[in-house]
Image 1 (cartoon, rainbow, N blue to C red):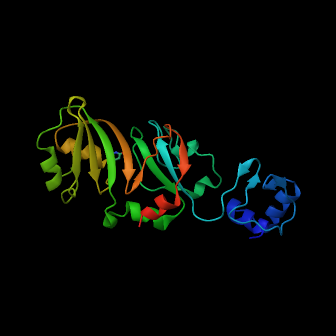
Image 2 (spheres, helix red, strand yellow):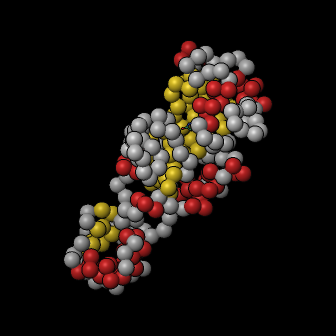
Length: 232
Ligand code: URA
């Protein structure tokens, strides 16, 4: 692909604007400043603009370890948005493939590929999500059965779909919950329906994609091809 075309698609600039960036000497390919628009670049080329490595044009996919206190939206009056943690171009084109509440931590997937995120968020697809949950009160003996049967949430028509729990630590009221729905405040409402209260909530997995333990809260990385394809 020609370098000017690459810049147009990656930066969202016009051909003329791309030519100006090149003339100013702002673009390098494989560590060399390039001013010629017709230079060919490939997937193996390292294209940099203003000291930033530019991704190949095409859809982008990231996982973020969301810290507490950040909202999953582009704008908020009260809290910083999770996008402020991103050092990427064209942030306005990205969206969350399933949100977390401001006080929930853990795995958030972010992309500009609407078809891909639809497979995660569409209720019809029943994509599993795993949450680590810490409850205020003891884990009830009957929770597993009640979650399998389904719960009646306030202001919802039907019962919740069968969900699974695995107790991690009875003394800490800590468990893993797997659900395949994503209603508003779903997990908190499920435990409220069981007469308990969620004290802390952390998402660990979406489908086959597991939160990378090497990511500190606030850090993110690009998804691997395998992770992207696992959402089928
Ligand atoms: N369920 C909730 O209640 N909150 C979240 O952030 C995610 C799922």
